[in-house]
Length: 336
Image (cartoon, rainbow, N blue to C red; front, side, top):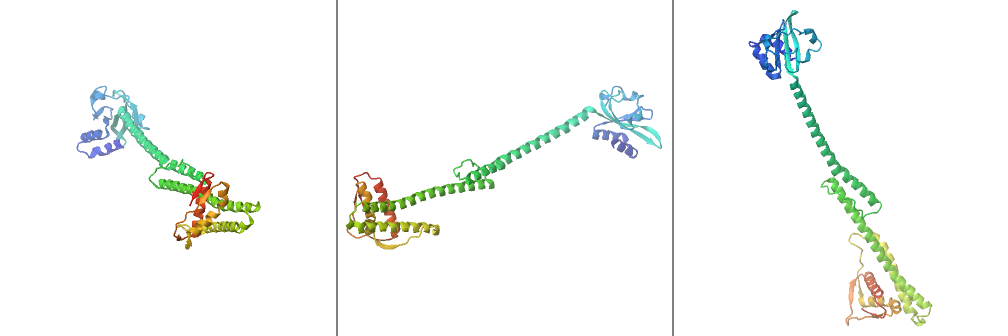
């Protein structure tokens, strides 16, 4: 195409040699024009790469038919150049008459350098793309895949009931991190809920065990004759009171389903605190006699009337006395 450009433009130029020199500078190749006798007519390059003076060169071995198929050859162009060149030949004809030949020469060293530059650009581009791909890959692995894997494993452990699982360590400051933190918060709350459940069951079992122990103790004392018949009514009243307390505890368990976020509903009423304390102390007489513990009640001179939930107050007093007796040594005194 370059030779076609030269051939089509020479007739329209006032200074064809200047055009060839400019063309030589643009394409970085040397233009050699041969006349019909294969003698150099004009050469745009320097003589540094020529093996002899261009004005005395006669290329006798030049055969135009050698270039009909490929239009180019690589070599020293019939030994007129010192180094290998890529030579492209174009025959200048008009009305089937050959006027000469235009030969464009480019040293193979320049072509190799261009190939090296292109290859270098390719490898640099490939290295940049590879580095970016690795950065994207490791960012995906570190910030997306591994956190999601930890979340999946943690969810499986939480589903098994292992709320103390500590393998979820995601510190991402994004949506994945929010999901991980929410999952950790959920597991913490579930773990606390299970602890609360265990504590609740322990407290409930304690509340049921104490009145049952009293009822059992008084019934056994009546049956084996420890309690005389004249005191039956007194202690049977205590047994009935403990049975009523068990009934209240059972009703309290049913009321759990009706609790709201504010806790259980309290039923307030006016009552005498001394009578509640005295009746509660009476239920522990049997337990105190077994451990030789003396219960001493010291009421103030003035009667103490309160406005509170009587059932809950009785339960608190019962738990306090039960623990006092349980953790007191035999022969001790408990002063109320």
